[in-house]
Length: 73
Image 1 (tube, one colour):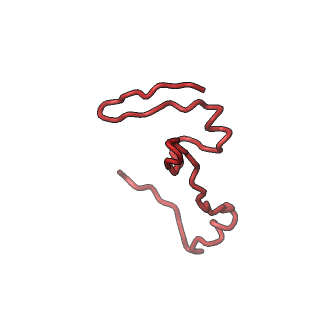
Image 2 (tube, one colour):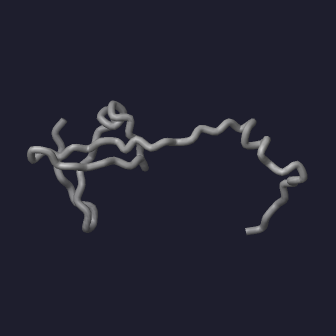
Image 3 (cartoon, rainbow, N blue to C red):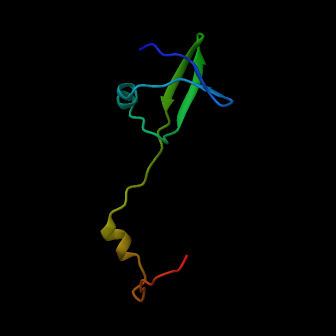
């Protein structure tokens, strides 16, 4: 893939294709590590430990006397 460095306001950047992001397992909002090796830019996904929850377990942790109520914003 070939792309150009572009400018958005005071920022410079490149577009990454959907297929490249998919191959790396990166989605919008994910953190990436950017480094330089032998004058090449390396972009790697940051592997974060995301906790997985089950709704059943979360509901079980709610106080027994909990009652939902409307809140006016």
